[in-house]
Length: 118
Image (tube, rainbow, N blue to C red):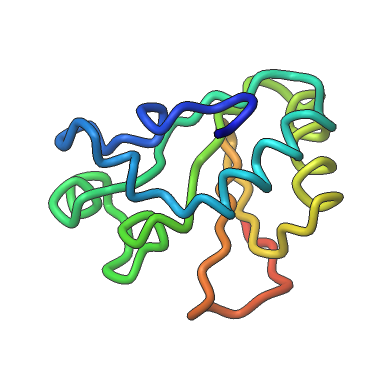
């Protein structure tokens, strides 16, 4: 179904198979962004169970819990630019930038057109 991703890449570490709960439209957009960026997107965090979300310090209404979010590993500023540029080009409008990852989500319950830092 996806060119660059498998559902298992989005599994919560404490729930094998949970990656199948990721929103398909979200992953299709990630696929397009990955094509544009022309570098691998390594998923650090996809779907999270509530208990795993608490363990990693996620907010109680985390988009990860609902299958609308992923954190993409980012090793340097060049990769960060390529990933961010591609995400914005395909239409993502909720992005968080950390030192070693980029969070992206399509949560319909949250404000669009925002970029934040960790």
